[in-house]
Length: 305
Length: 311
Ligand code: HEM
Image (cartoon, rainbow over all chains, first blue to last red; front, side):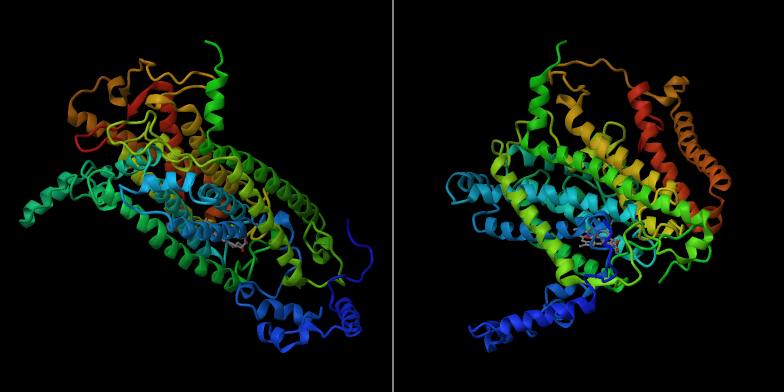
């Protein structure tokens, strides 16, 4: 598969040749060159020619693309290294935001409306069913791609210096992703979500010191008695009550799930994603594919670049 | 009893269970894919270790190389075209999936009508499965926090400088097998068990068995101290504490010996705090499947019984 000639098709020299050809080609056309009109230049601050400069500017002068470096390790574009799972996770998050906002137009987080809104989406809203299905399956897919992304980061040792902290940001993102899915599960207000969330939050009853059935509540109560305050932990003031806004999964729990799902967690997730992406750049872009290090060189390694 | 294909099909074809099938297939595929890259790199490493002269001049990647080629390429178009293609495939795939499978919608929530089995979404079923083996404060609270804390600790306790930025098995056998054990067995496998094996009453149904809600299983749960005929609560509590904490201690001591013998480099590179955290995490991680085996094979429910909590 290896190219035989020693002219690199991506090298600067080959590009310049190609650029000259393109320019001549465009000039020879009698239609006014759209890419040189003030209109075009007002949008993109660089020319369209295939020059190395423009290739860099295309990335650097675009707010979305400049998340990425203008140039990258030539082997890093190989699929076999990073599997694209981080990028796909982010893309799925974008799809979820888009379809999620559309769903919000049709959804009321109240016991009276929530389930009816599902039926309405399913049977009456144009493309409502497709919208809901896409949101549902994108959420499941995002969980899968996050796990795969984490697996590849582990297998390439990409959490090693200097990327230790970004791995931790990743663990938080993993948690946020799972909690996003979990809070969304309750929103249709059907049997599936109701019992899943009931089972899930029942565990919070048993939180040590904070749940009314958890170990250590006697200690909390005893401490309160010594201090002269009532510190009894029961089903109406423990951590589960705080999660649900009640002692059972009911209208307050629905509202809480809705606000976590549509506001708090997406915002938190976005913030951590911004940090995650920023740190990838600051930690020296993708970790590889790096040249292999030999066992005999391990002790010389500084670990940091 | 005849093999119940209908039951098997019902469970595997449930729209909400399709993702876990996809996940299992994808994890399997990428595991193979990653290890294949690992083997490629390991071959190169072996070759270079044996030939120091070559190691000095080699570009050290198993990919095509020419000294005249640039080390970097432009993001536009070489990366962006791949990303565009990926976005296209994901979008089309998702739309097809959404046309093909309807998102489930069950009857309206009804607190008076318990579903049996009542299951969390599939990605949490590993945790729900742990509820069989541990009390909720461990399964639902302590263990998830240990998982998150343990994951966060990984970069700080893995002191091996090798294998940073490339796939390798040879240079990171211990790290990779530990992670894969945690992820594949304690997370993915338990989730699969929770999804496909656990039926009504959270009872164990092998694939092909009918999920009979009236099935009775006569299992007598025992506690460890009962095997020794202990009855006095004080004795029972102290016995359980000794077994549990002592077991963790012995486990750490055994790990310590193994580490010193087989991983002397890691042992020397880690400081005391790193070393102790590593030992704790390894032993606690090994204790989970141990408890699972005790319960599944010997029907032992608790090892440590006290008036305040049970382990
Ligand atoms: C919402 C979830 C996440 C998103 C959107 C995300 C996104 C990304 C992207 C786009 C990259 C660039 C390389 C690639 O695509 O592989 C990346 C790299 C990275 N991610 Fe994530 N990630 C997420 C979760 C995680 C998790 C769960 C972990 C680990 C616990 C993690 C750790 C890392 C690390 C260490 C890198 C640097 C890898 C390298 O330099 O080779 N991320 N992430």
